[in-house]
Image (cartoon, rainbow, N blue to C red; front, side):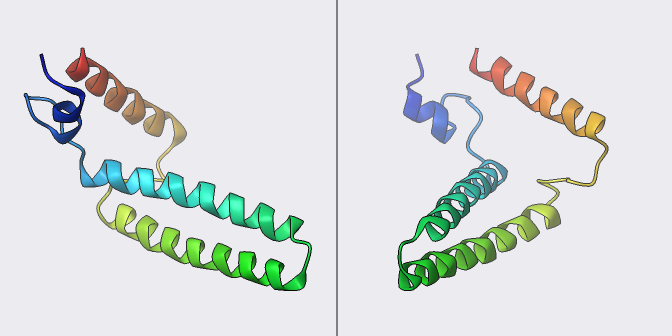
Length: 102
């Protein structure tokens, strides 16, 4: 029986974590970080804190842009496809992942 670790790392014939999955996770993390820093900047009680959090938002957005550009170049992310096509691809990906882990 494959362990959780071997499944994540691609052992025992399980699909491995790909660069695409890592990039998507990084994009999701950047989104959450940007939201957190923006909320903190809005709620900051002093101008110094507001500037600090605003600077962090800018840094996160720059990193997110870099990862987004990479994902677009590698065709890991296709924001310009019709919604129906994006949904179909997502469903196929989900079915493949579910099937491989069943």
